[in-house]
Amino acid sequence: MRYGMNLLLWTDTLQDEIRPILDDVKAIGFDAVEIPVFELDVEKYARWGKYLDEAGLARTGVTVRGVDDNPMSPDPQVRKKGIANNNLALDCCRAAGCEALVGPYHSALGYFSGKGPTADEWRWAVDSMRQVAEHAQQAGVMLGVEYLNRFECYLLNTAADGARFCREVNHPNCRMMYDTFHAHIEEKNIPEAIRALKDLVVHVHISENDRSTPGMGNVRWPENFDTLHEIGYNNLMVIEAFGLALERLVPATKIWRRMYAGERQLATDGLNFMKTEVAKRW
Image (cartoon, rainbow, N blue to C red; front, side, top):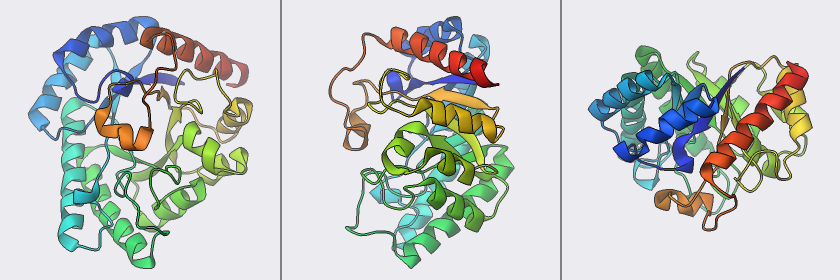
């Protein structure tokens, strides 16, 4: 098993001020970081790839789409922009040396129509993702599509939704990621949810029910780790926790109070928690 830390705990923009954090994350014992890919600047991500190489950290990228570039919009020009921006995010990932691009880039984050996805919206989302998967294959980057709880999106809310979506996209570079926070909200049966992704899951977010230190809240951790072991998962487990630095993501994350003593303590305790749980099973 490898262990990663999502940099969104500190920042949603790669900037020189966070370079010491990379060294600290490595010193704590992480193998990888998850970097925000919200600025679609390929040259910038190429420079950061060199910094991450120097830090000795593997990496994945995370991105989102909005209303203006919604890949399942009824407007074909908006869908086209969504595909283009997802492809640019993949180009940034390739430049930075990311092995995967994860996140809810299948539809607009935080936008709602007032009902569930229509047949057309589903078809548009599948068609858009198939084109993105083709680009991902060319870029040498795996897609880890993320399902979110119903308060953040309305296209994919459960593991079963995600499994159906990936199978309809039907491309080897379109796979799923699993997030313990969203599953805690939406799934009636955690083991069955994880089993639904058995042949599809390429990435796991370890995220507590309040988005703070993993292992300190109410997520059903034994069921999660037991079933991830059962299906043979053995790739990255990445802590996703949020602080107060994410003004652009507040509409989705709803984080406006501090729920941990400090970022370094959260990362240290979270890594120890993951390693302890994995050691019991793997």
